[in-house]
Image (cartoon, rainbow, N blue to C red; front, side, top):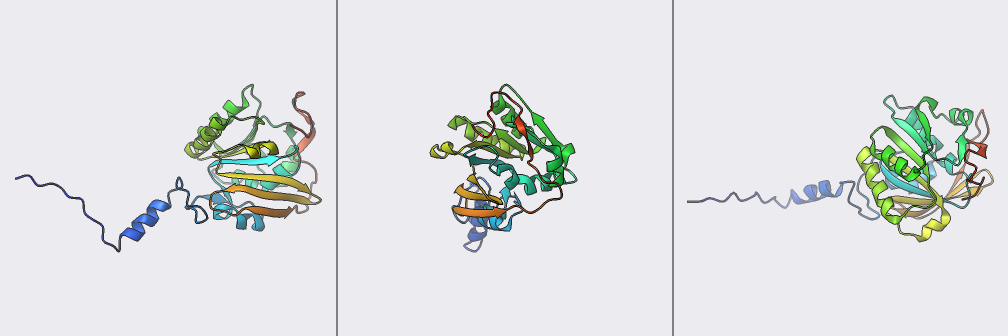
Length: 238
């Protein structure tokens, strides 16, 4: 006689816990009640309150949309960059094709560990961005690539997840009209002593504006030099 192995049917008491365990998978989007994701604090309590999980995601892709270069987009990220590069087991913090040369004294004054920072200038910055994300060698990768095909956004999101790295893609505000697979999209606009961050797309977070103020530092100055590294990249514009 053949006896089939019938899988055990979970009791009613087991179903809620098993369902909740499944819903905590980071690949599942639950809207405003988002699945748990690893995050790192932005360093700004008001911004953390609006971001899913209470901070920037540790892996995946986020887009920061700006009207002009140098509106405060790097300052918004500095507390996070400092925290990640100061970790005992910190991996690299990569800057891919920045329009200006990063200014080491200002970065150091804001707590960024310079020995963990490298700048890559490549003929194909989009390729370099993806390879840095998927390599597993980076904590965070910043990239300035104005024009990115929609199909590549999905690839970058997956590359960040696979390499356990956070990708930050800086793009013009006009890209807000395009669809995107990034897990988070924000705009950054300048204020007199800070910046206004607007959440456009947020998996489980809030939408709306968050005003941030910069705290005084012993060494003042921009985190990038005033002259663009590449002659074909006009200062302050895309």
